[in-house]
Length: 522
Image 1 (cartoon, one colour):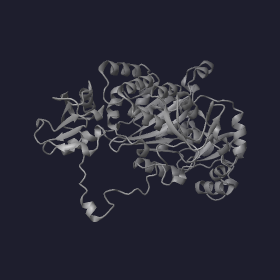
Image 2 (cartoon, rainbow, N blue to C red; image 1 turned 30 degrees about the vertical axis):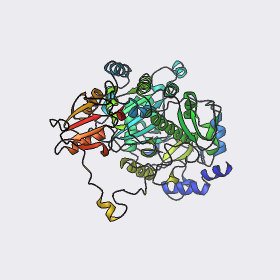
Image 3 (cartoon, rainbow, N blue to C red; image 1 turned 60 degrees about the horizontal axis):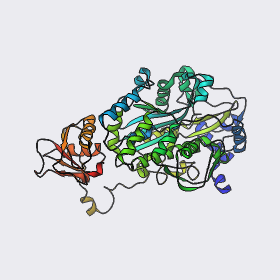
Image 4 (cartoon, rainbow, N blue to C red; image 1 turned 120 degrees about the horizontal axis):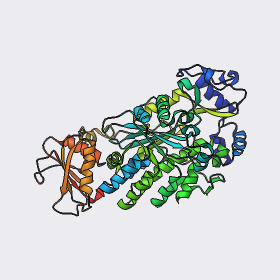
């Protein structure tokens, strides 16, 4: 363990070189306060003045541990389970009454204000979009003590998520709550203050400007619901590189792969003192939160229809989002074949820790942050090199490894010239056209709900039962020149091109595409 800690900590020389890369030579010795960055729109006068500056968290592990322990158990954080919404609603089997009840419960929360909706930027169907996933401490004890007004709360968990349905990719980027950002007229403050200043709308605005991306959707979830969600799906499997013991989070887990229940998952997402020996426990906790989200998504994809529907109902009791249940169902259908291990990426904003006036701040490495977001925008992992993820080997991770996309070989350009000649040209998907859905799976309501999903995306779809049931594999038949429409239908339903066939006259030629549903869609 000692060797691992030594490997993870920065030396004074390392810290000096890192700060020098951000602020110029001599910054560590000469800078009495945090120097303004080139992206700031205000002067540095708004920044807290520094009467004392401690070493970084990585250097001052012992001081950090002692200071943090004095705070007691701290606030109960709210982890962002809304990513689960992207894949939760499940299998296209929602019936009308269930869907109406779900929409009603989502709408009754009345937290998605007009101000927030004005901050959200609409995107075209099948275009990648960004969602802000937020966890806010609104525990009963805090509300009773301070009141339920938004100004009394801070956003403790901030995850910017990019969702790309056609490419079957999801990327989670945690933004440390202590990140110092410019809030214009409100000066330079910790990013989690934005929620207290102006609620979800202002939080969305600040994160959008900080990441330089348009945010199209928002979700805020009660962390306490994690317990019931995980228990509803029968627990989740996680892999811990090191053992975790945290008295404050009431958790004691060995290293290795294990299945945990809801209460343990809650403790895992709250535990930061388990990493006091490594410094900066918030970073390792954020990595574990992303791991838990990935584990939930992976487990949900394996659920039977009834359990999946129950899980969505559990989530609707706590989620505040601009998504309607029908929006969720439309998106969910596209992620049925989602490969969590290889296509769900994870990372966090690159920052340098500084201690100013007895307060920790995370100062963004602007160049590294811009490089990271360029990779995210391109659908790649936030990290170009595994060494950039300093939590790896200590905290958990999503999927089977570091999810580094750099250096991956394009299958269409690898191998011999003979192999390349066998690669068929890619068909451009079209997301409009007439579609007739035949339910050959024998699952009640599957045809109608699949047609609804296609209609939400932009197709003109209707449905009926097939002449016989028991079909195992879904097949998409196209007529004439409508292969592009078939490709669009396949991507919308989360199916590969191997499911597409040209209609030989067996099925109707009145539509662009015929979808014969199989049991694989249930």
